Image 1 (cartoon, rainbow, N blue to C red):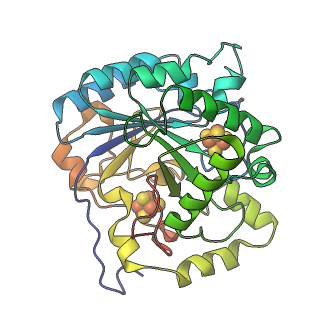
Image 2 (image 1 turned 90 degrees about the vertical axis):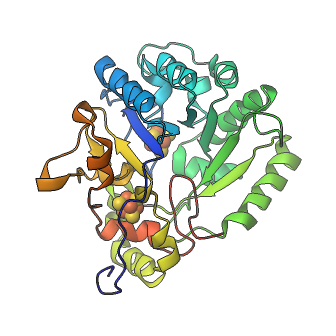
Length: 322
Ligand code: SF4
Ligand code: SF4
């Protein structure tokens, strides 16, 4: 489609290093494209973490570290990793599922109740999934009891100043549709979330990111099983938006897996579509060369229609105006 429309989308920059440090998670969400769960054990090695820090230190152009998982806080090196990145002057975002604060470590039982204070001390940006502001829909997607725990976890973050407009550290929420349809407009939904969470629970946050469910892994399986895969893909195709395509996140971000392999994004990582430089050589953090990585061709595929439909979708929400 890109070729037919004469659309060329080379990488523009690498301003964000997104690192998936573990697939271990305290939850098992229905839409999870990582297939994360308490049974997963993949972890980025201490050498891998050291290498990421070296890359951040050497390249001022990479201003942001985006730490993801699984639940990244379950990695034993998480605290030191983010503290060191902050000390390097980087902006650090953590994909935080909220419930890990209350559930603790699913294997060792270690408490994670210190996280809100730790986040605040390091001014980490918390990016937290909350599929809806109503209990029924959130629990349907993320598991029974998740909504109530998420409200309590948000309360603890608010108590540390998170989400307080203008002064506190930043708390973003992430919405994704419960079923095979496109998200509603981001600005309107953000206003709904703010109104409902404030009036019903007294909770505040800064921004809402709307994310389209990507037709891969666990969500694709769900679509296949319910006979909805073809119609969902047609829906995404019909909603293709060139402006959203121009803003896809793979043009300014790279994604690293627990083995240090480099991908264009988290989704390509899950599909094992590894990024390759000149001559088809796979890219890795262990022989990182900024220019080589920047000049790679992006590995587009059918699943990319999830990023280019409607107002667009990325780890930072809509890409073409909400
Ligand atoms: S909390 Fe996030 S990483 Fe964990 S299972 Fe749910 S979607 Fe996947
Ligand atoms: S899924 Fe495709 S369009 Fe979206 S960020 Fe990844 S490579 Fe880019």
